[in-house]
Image 1 (cartoon, rainbow, N blue to C red):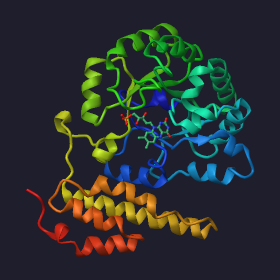
Image 2: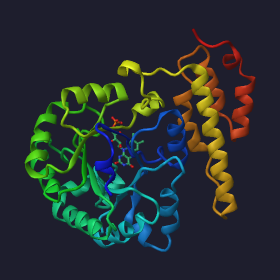
Image 3: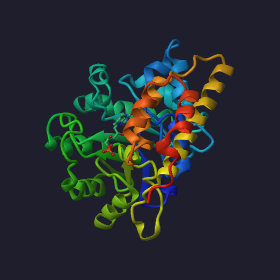
Image 4: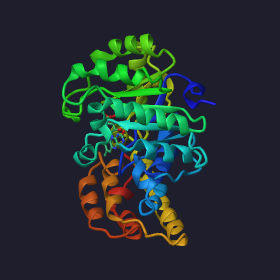
Length: 336
Ligand SMILES: Cc1cc2nc3c(=O)[nH]c(=O)nc-3n(C[C@H](O)[C@H](O)[C@H](O)COP(=O)(O)O)c2cc1C
């Protein structure tokens, strides 16, 4: 069993996004239009290995019924801990394990993880090998960037990774130094394909960076049919229906009422998750981070920014529901 071979090309994935693609938001996306493959937010291997951190690590690895197939994304720098967490992921219900070698966050990099792995290729190789050896047959993939500081690092770095024959390799087409500040380097796709074909033809090659919708991914696939898939991250903020299949593969624009109903789904899932956490004796979820999502749903209609501003002052899901119920901007007839 290998999910990367089972899925039809091009494989469209929701990118792992810390603080965004948690178990609640993945269910929201699934109810709008699901990608072929979900990823968790990244989970630290050493947290899982420690008595103190395991509980938090496990809560990041919670899977909803609508999640599978889903890949667990993991990060760290301790090969032993990569081994330990990888050994547990199959029984938790995951279809694969993805190693994060691309996160640009300073704290993560100072701890030697994420994109810092580009500077320690021997350690990266050891982590891949340890993850594979303990994976109980789950496919092991890597998500990374072109390099740490310079674009021309891509060849030695990705050659090192491909030499380990990961099941899949997702390349965010920027360096760590570039963060997300410059356009993704799509011009390198032919070179990346050639390198994959030469070193590890079985590895699925996925591209990430600035791809906003299924329509855009399919257009890229027409240009580069040997790519196996695409990962969409921030595109889901612009349009939570970005994975929706349409006739002629044209982009799908949800109506105002679809977006508001999706927000209501999000609120309901938040409450459900909170109730489950309390029942299990866990701390309740903080309401504040939920506010980051409001701009996904409340936008592009007269009064949207005033309504959002009002919602930002709320303290609970029930307050939000009351604001929505009373809002003259929402209860007006549908937009043209
Ligand atoms: C808020 C946020 C959190 C992210 N967290 C992760 C993460 O946990 N793991 C990871 O591999 N990439 C993470 N990324 C990077 C995305 O997966 C993706 O590579 C990046 O956003 C570029 O793709 P896009 O242009 O489609 O957004 C994060 C990005 C954002 C915006």
